[in-house]
Length: 151
Image (cartoon, rainbow, N blue to C red; front, side):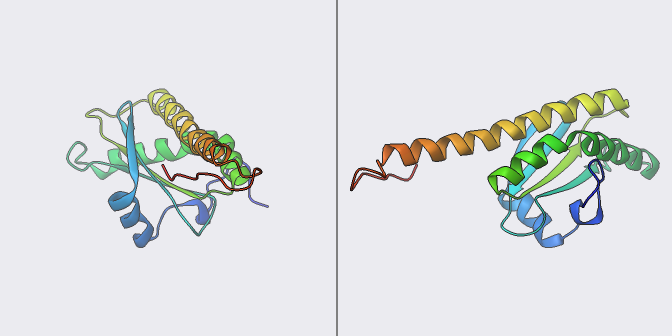
């Protein structure tokens, strides 16, 4: 059994193919100074995560690594509800956070931004479930034949 608050090898987003799919065909939104890219995948672990910081804004690798460490730590501590939700609904999700601010953030700022991003991802997952239920109920699956439009 995996650690509850760990960020193991299988949970890190490392596959070049998945990362390319994520940035080319995935969706994104902003949460504070963080840009969140996400993609529902077919195979792999339930939840994969990656983090990055811009070389344009942070010339020193020490600063970029500090930001990535803070993003990973905030994600690691808050990912459990999202993981459970994905597991219950049998979805797989790849997520990549990119910090785009100009100044080195404090941990509290990163933590709050991550909290907002995770709650937005949960809303996105619930919206997909609601649209599925709505579509099935419109086609009257228990009443013979019915109209089943694809939205």
